Image (tube, rainbow over all chains, first blue to last red; front, side):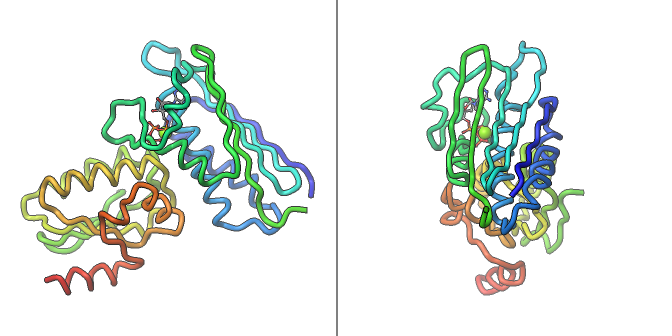
Amino acid sequence: METNRLYAELPAISVNEAVSRVMISGLLMNIRGVTMGEIEEVKVALSEAVTNIILHAYPEGYPAGKIYIKGVVEGGRLTLKIWDKGCGIANLSQAMEPMFSGSGSQERTGMGFTVMQSFMDSLDVRTEKGKGTSVVMTKKLGIGT
Amino acid sequence: MVLEIKGGRRVVIATLKGDLDHHGCQQIRQDIDSVISMPSTKILVLDMTRISFMDSSGMGLLLARNKLAMDNQVQLIICGASVEITKLLQMVNLDKQIPLFSTLEQAIEYVERRG
Ligand SMILES: Nc1ncnc2c1ncn2[C@@H]1O[C@H](COP(=O)(O)OP(=O)(O)OP(=O)(O)O)[C@@H](O)[C@H]1O
Ligand SMILES: [Mg+2]
């Protein structure tokens, strides 16, 4: 199967949650044997990382920033990288625990990283204070070749 | 419109529409809260048949609405959740706290049986 790739820079505003999902669906649609369920799971995982950038990466006082997305499909495997140039995460292992949220909001359950982990095959998060955060996820899709 | 209200005053059926992501939740939250806060509401059926997408923002929305419902002595019921959405509900044990049904018909039957 041919290699296909996608790169996007989007302003960190909430309408782009849906925009990013449409883009990734388009990239995955032609993979041989891919199921709707697999595409849905990737959409949820991507949405978690994108929403985290919109909500947490560029807090008050930070210049409005961007969401960076790179997707590569090779041999039926997706590698998806989502990153920002924002504030970074002070305590990463705590942030990745289920039900931990650094935002004081009642509406956040702190399940974003847990959802990424359970819907993808692998999850790797790197962060540096004041420099930004990057999330790399992979998933095997369809029958591959 | 993201929320369509049917049913009576005691049992309210709310058909949610669109995406339950962070963007979509902002619009839907107040509509659900205003129904829960009405003193006549005793049972609120959230029909998710037309929700095409949900992530952790939707989980947070439903957890917080369930808390508000309990505080107001309102029983929440969810129907029509897709396979992926059901997985997310299970991750935060919402399936143990709220009765879940595959279809609206089954949810209504449950409400009628309980009287
Ligand atoms: N890109 C990021 N930049 C800065 N902080 C981040 C970033 N992503 C995550 N975080 C921090 O990690 C915490 C945990 O993220 P996670 O997605 O698991 O939960 P949440 O976003 O708080 O809640 P939920 O995703 O359930 O709505 C966040 O509350 C935030 O403090
Ligand atoms: Mg999150």
